[in-house]
Amino acid sequence: MQPFDALTVRAVLQEAKPLLVNRRVDKINQVGRDEVVISLRSRTGMSHFLLSAHASFGRLCLANMPQPAKRANPPNFCLLLRKHLTGATLVGVEQMIGERIVDVVFSCLSEVGAPSLKVVTAEIMGRHSNLILWDKESSQILGASHVVTREMSRQREVMAGLKYVRPPSQDKPNLFKLSEEEFGRLFDQLNDLEAGGSPPASLDSWLVNSFAGLGRHLADEIVSSITVPAGEDGRQQSESWKAEIWKRIASLQSATDYRPALRLDLTRYTVLSWWADVADPSTWKTFPSVNDMVDEYFHHQELRERFQQLKDRLSSELKAEAERLESRLAAAARYLESTCDQSEYKKFGDLILAHLGELEARQAELICPDLYAPDHPSLSIPLNPNASAVQNAQHYYRQFAKVRARQQAAGNVRSDAWQRLEVVRGQLESLEQAKTADELERLKETVFGHRLQDVAAAQPPQPKKKTKPRLLSISSSDGWTILVGRNRQENDELVSRLAQPQDIWMHVLGQGGAHVLIRVPSTKQEPPLTTLKEAAQAAARLSKAGGGGKVRVVYTQCRNVRKLSKNKPGQVRYENEKTMEVDTAGPMPAALRQLFAHRQPQAR
Image (cartoon, helix red, strand yellow):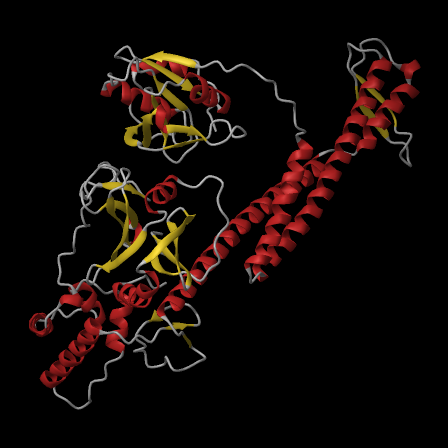
């Protein structure tokens, strides 16, 4: 997959600016964890500007997609953008030269009604991508799609309240600011390396390693578009390469006429069409605008990834189910092979009853002719000397009934497992032949629908008993009271009824777990660091991430915590949070031992 590079950013903005600048923000929707769509209105209609900080599909462009349905519970970052930018006017879109960093500037009113400039900076840098809202005058960060703490990055923190600073630049010259003299000097150094016996792997790798602002695909396109005349000596050929490469770089620096195209196999795209086979309609698809090309390319890439993820998930589920059924078939076959003929037990009982008159008290064995065999051979039947003859016969009849019932059950299990295995194998074949996401979705409904029906049939729902929540209360090393909710009902009781505005609320970041509350007697007091760490340890250890290792815990005052819905106990929305990292692999604090001595099943 080809990433979104600096040249594509410039081409997208050149086309998009006339449709964005001096337009008023009408709606803001967060369509994914890392994607925001800003809808702008003017007299000529609506424009939808997509800002994505996805680790793999990060980009910005005019979106052709229809507006998504309004979410019942928008994420905090979306609410923050709506608070500051709804009704604002977009007054500028600026890219840092040769960088994948774009400032989208809005003119709006501050909380006191004064004119203010707010900036949404899109940093499209792979796994470090981010969307940051900050104030232009004070440079103070108001919020970000990804909060970056000191524990996560020692070079640069990104969180509300801090000053916004640019990401650290690369320690190499920027291709879009490069002069011809500097390029010639670096290219001559390359020739010296080749003469010394240490040449680079190729010219495109040399471009990527020597200059900032271009990626592997653009460097490959530059080198592939150059044709050097044959028959020149080494020095002449080197000078020809230098002149041609600089010609391409100079074209990049001043390019305004873009010719976007996309390979039909989605392996790469181009905004300049320097590839030799771009004109081939069987290989490339051309577009009237760069925005259309970018939107279609990344949309298809996202669909392809979702298709592959769903296919891998279904394949894993079906193969695991097939292995379980095969194990069940093997176990049933082994049992049927190991059990003796059930008619032997019934024959032993019949022969004992037929020779009741011959049996004596405490006899351990009955030797008699086998009346069921053609030649009536002699047969030995073991007896329990402490039981009567009738009791011995009843014992063999009971064994006959048990073996017959077990063999019937094993046969039913084998038959059912075989039928289910045939169905699973057919689903695996359908999975391999599936070509579209709709086919996978239908198969998913079939696979997981039957699974849920089987679970419901095996475990009928039991009526829930309403019990009054019993919250655990512990004391920290500093004597502060810490309350812990261990399930949804207790978490809801903690937030809805017991929390005071000045209390400190804690929860593990991004995982299900316990809500923890630190009692703060008054607004003028703050809990000490030791108490905060012990409460964070309780939240981390009573969560899905508490298996050992470093866990991030968020905390804020309870006045910043709100319930999502009455029908969703234990689910909350919070803001103005801070983050703390704790290590659950270390020794447990002494204050928590009383908590884990009465530990119940963790919250979900």
